[in-house]
Image (cartoon, rainbow, N blue to C red):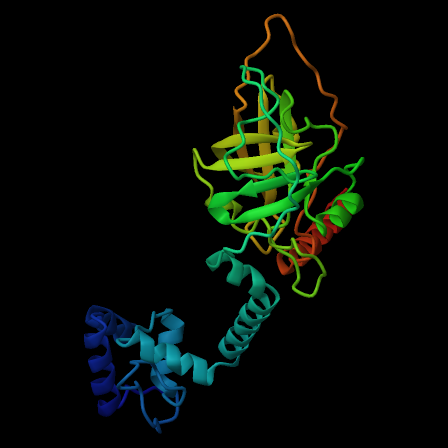
Length: 339
């Protein structure tokens, strides 16, 4: 039969609505409802969380019917209650912690390298230096006293303690570049040679799985720390070229405009970003400052670059790359079905 709520129910309910500053709602609701339920009610509102107990049959049904927002005076305590009592919250937290643990484990060398820069520069092979002849179009920058020019081609970045060989494959396919990246930095085939007019494009790893063999898996992990006016040096064919950072840009893998050639000697350094993924490409742009280059009058030079629709990935073996590959495959499947 129809009945009014018990006195103790009303007292606890009024206390709850007073704490949550919604007393005006209670009067209106009770005017509009006759409640048919059992008389026995264990407890209506928890004194700490101000939440309706499941045993409070009469008030609970009324609250759900009205769509009331059950406010908690102590949100942290309420959160702990949810963690202890709700399986879906426990499930979500467990998966979140598992992901963080797995990501940290697979990318531990990246995290370590981001905060530590090895001050021990690899020893280079000493060769005889050359006597330079001055002039605005000299082949090499001046060699400092005691400085040695290594045999082969090397890139040196004093600020982030990078000293690594540059390799020159004769192709730009993904497999070739990945193979050469294990041995050092890679010059993008078809772009300008160091010291030449044009854009010298060089790429290197910012991350890799720690069990993948290679001394240069994290050579460019701190490339993003370079700022305007920082210096980069390339030793190439017995000559020294000095470059200065002019800017940075982050692009998608499909943006090949960064490969465009220039009418002065420039340098572009590329790696995947953020470290641990291959979602984007970080490009650091530099201009050659020594030897100083003077543009010839009425002379232009064109460099043919192989057509490509995607910049190579330097960090294919990473957890972020795996997630991106799965997502791309799902997106491709959904697109094919919609067509």
